[in-house]
Image (cartoon, rainbow, N blue to C red; front, top):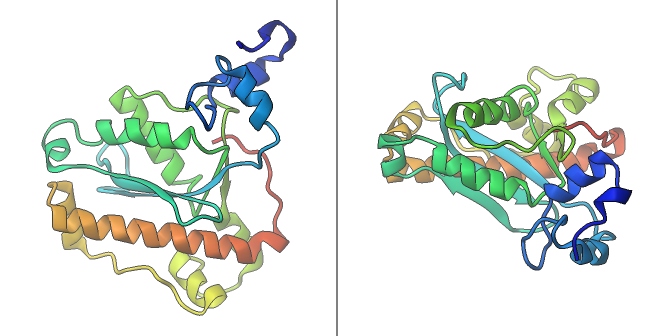
Length: 221
């Protein structure tokens, strides 16, 4: 059953078009019955992180990404290959990332509104990959919760892990691995991806600590 678009507001139509049903992975505009069955489902939240070759998206590209499902062990992830590094860089990876991103209603990251999200969006522009439209997905940046609530020598993710969790699971950022990963070397790509996984694990744990002191506002991705 298609959605009754003549009775819906524009923002509702946009939301239905950009979200897919759990059973068939088809947009809710086309599978409106699935939406009616699933609409009472809790919001799908994921913890997002990317690793890149440069801090600026016009001089670098994405090596890998992770989005960890809230309250689950499942991590949606992707990584470039050696062929990608030699050909289209992160184009294939971005397409996979956009597909995984559509699974979530909201993502949470760390310094992500200033880095991860603008970097991803810029790479999508440069690679001709569609990014979710304004208002179709929401995002929360834990960095600003840290600024409001923590007084410390550093409010980076690693130091917050030590302060709030007793330790950080982050691995060292070793330059050689990021350089070799940009060339598509598997050993280094595996190292960078593992680093990314540990970041999203820490991000979720730190978010749990911050939850009593923050409000989950609807800020578009």
